[in-house]
Image 1 (spheres, rainbow, N blue to C red):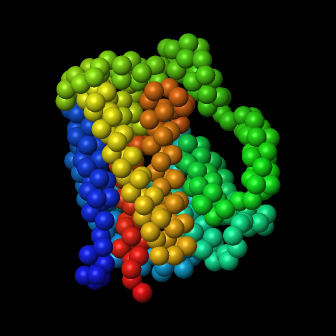
Image 2: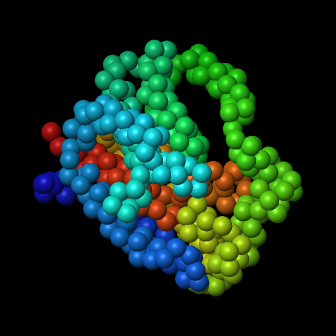
Image 3: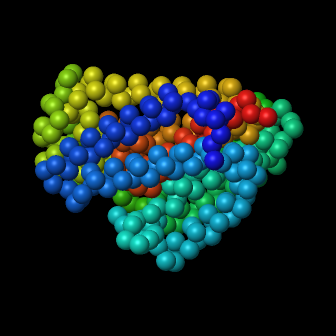
Length: 362
């Protein structure tokens, strides 16, 4: 149970900002599916939002030290589930990363992100050194890479890539010596090009189409091109709710999931899109503040990992809609349709609220 002292330190600003963003997402999903789309997507998202808020409050009620202390147990269970999905998972949109439970589709790789944050925070918090050493870096990389490899084997490269910002952000907070930082950057620069040969053909084409938008505007670059047209057509004030013709007439695929920002920009215009981005900025600034005032290293690392996770999710998703990044299937936190993403985001924010509530607790 949450005692009164903890309730007194509850960060209603962070929680309220997240709920406002989620409600904007529900409104966008309603508008995106009003003229056709998945049946009852709007109602299902409301249900997922309710589950997400409940999950957030549950995460606040359990001391984050208990969660961090048992992080390796959660991590082991998560790895076993990811392995099981390779054999018993359901393939959707070319990715075998889903479990069907009682008629509900669940994507465990979303929830594993929070578990990886806890596992990394647990390891880093136990170190009593000002800077990380090479063997520390190796252990932290292995903790991150194991689920990443399993998720790549499931065919979900986009989700797998989102694990690296968590690791890099937490490494930056933990502290790397200049020499070790240079080594990490050098190895990354040398290894990254080799990853090109492990990409599937359509993934390579998406990258090339992002670099050269005129390469295949009616093929692999169609989705990004139509998204840019839709955002531009919104003007300053937008076309209004339910009047986003470019988005709602099917010109932009996956408009209620990965490209929900496109719909909001067309309907609400530059002004509405800017408000959404400001809300994300306020959310991230609040997370940084919570990390700064955390009572211990465990709390600092947990909130830092969550902040990096949400920041890069939003950055990549919005970048996809305007053509800066190739479309890799990354949802926009709190706004995109999807139960797994919504619940994971609220669980992560619940952890951050947990750290904030207990900053004065002995």
